[in-house]
Image (cartoon, rainbow, N blue to C red; front, side, top):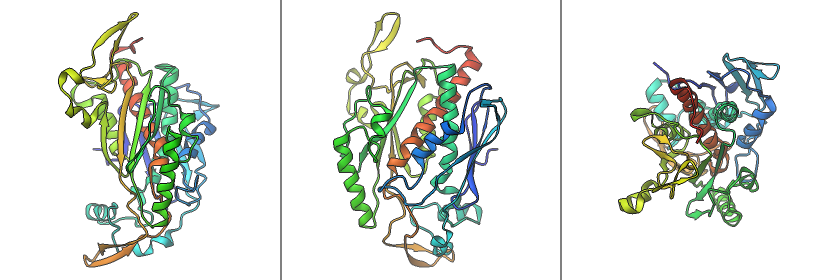
Length: 368
């Protein structure tokens, strides 16, 4: 029985580490051999995720330098488990001394204590978003496997779609990672970006926090990824996103808005484009019957406001007495900008796992 720290069936990752422990990382099993990889390639995406990168993220100063410990020789994967480590350098556990006796509202402090009878109160321990470092590192390899062996033109681009009620206008067919990285809030709309940044700054100055939605588009995905019934592609994408910290919702294609349409309005009519089957619209979000149909896979993930706020809140102690707690430590006033590469990472891990499963069962990936 899994203890909850592993993900995937053929391309499997197991993450380890706590926020203020010695370090965090991942062990990857099932990666095909002879995939070229360098620490610099992994570092690129880790730098997009790391703290202290802009004025609207946590000021914790971590370089998040990765080290490949095993599974790679002379720049190529060996087909054996790959271990990647990132050491914690700027942990400040003294900021969490009060949390030893008090549960932070809307954090995992109480539930971890109730489940295990013990918890690491420093920075949230295992429940901290620093755990996602391992996912981002593993996904660099997943993306390389996908592009080299299954889908050379595959693109996975996530971006901030909304911060509270400020919504970005983004063309799913044209948005690029370069466009997203051109602003510190990581959206594809420069006009909305300024408004979002101003609102996040306002929340930080007020000791408050804010949430929003990240949208992700996957272009040039092969047809046929996904399994019937219990391992539907959209179901695995949903699970991968909802096991990220601070997530509260997932929808794909038309999502909840599709409930306001009739079947005639909602269906995606098929037509031929040369020798390829195409859909005239994409309300299905690129997945039908749990299997990719070759159109853009488009989904959205809702992130709640950061739970730690610098204002007094009611809570209880480990002795089950009512008390009050004011947040301390270094935290993001909005998790969305740093969550963008994490959403991309989880999408890549799901697609890589399903591509390997498709090849194992059917032997081929559809040329469409």
